[in-house]
Length: 438
Image (cartoon, rainbow, N blue to C red; front, side, top):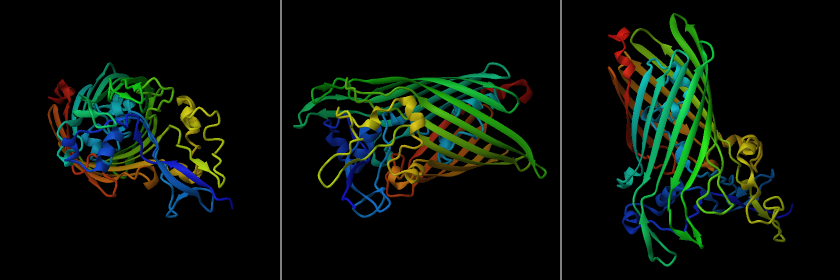
């Protein structure tokens, strides 16, 4: 067999890799954590990892293990679970009962919301376990049911990356900035029958990471894009013995839109277009006690990084960059084309394709619709990011007010920006003052 090796993608390197984080932050964080922070800032290109052709033709590393091939996109903040309720259920939220935060997970659920008007505010500290206090994500969402079959909603997320001092390659200061990103969502949902609904969304995305800085004679500019969402929900009420129960299924296609770039380069990065499928089983034990069990499965609908291999004569893979423009062929796939091709483009074949699915499992217990206990687990394959963590949380509700808390406990050696961090959401259920409830 020919001796063949591959260069395969690992977690990414910033387009603004010549910028550096100031010394005060470096005193607080390890190099590894700083890399994670930078990865969360921007779309990325790959580090190189030496991999070889395995016995079955799939790439393996020098230790004989599966080659890491993490999918990287621009503006990854769009995929951060924004609220504490789902954050306590392993980030599952596609099929659970609707509140204002459904705008992120599955807006079509909002036509089934118990109240006709709701607002949610969430604050999520970022890298707080390292003592950093100026990095956070804030999320504001609200909806209004127009009538019995239609609902509109608006969501705003803001991600602040704190103060950063930039330097050139020689370490000379080039200015400071406060990088930030935000997205605005506008949604419309409609019922089609008693148990089926659909929703559409339009969002504006803005990412300002190092505006005005220059790298390799390329001026960094803010990136922006417009994207859309398509959501479906189906509910099936039934009896489980003498108990009322509901099966709920939801489908969410989110962040469907063009690629984004922080320079005038034609080499652009995909935004995190995502396929999500969720199911939930809701069981009313009695008048006071209710349980929900839910599972979400997500997959990024962007091209899998392809492997640049060289044979024993140093000849590159002719399919990696066939036109010789210096941009890998997989990065030139159109966003719409990638929605279809991403189901079968993993270089390791079907086995690697299955590793690209992320799974969230969650459970929720309510007592008298006033006190909730939640738990969940999130898992991702080791070669695709290796995020694995348990989550727990509590919920309180009184009249128009609701308060949710969540806490994340990592279970792998992959650090998480939310390690051992408490986040919270405040909900306002204005429909609680309807005459029927007084």
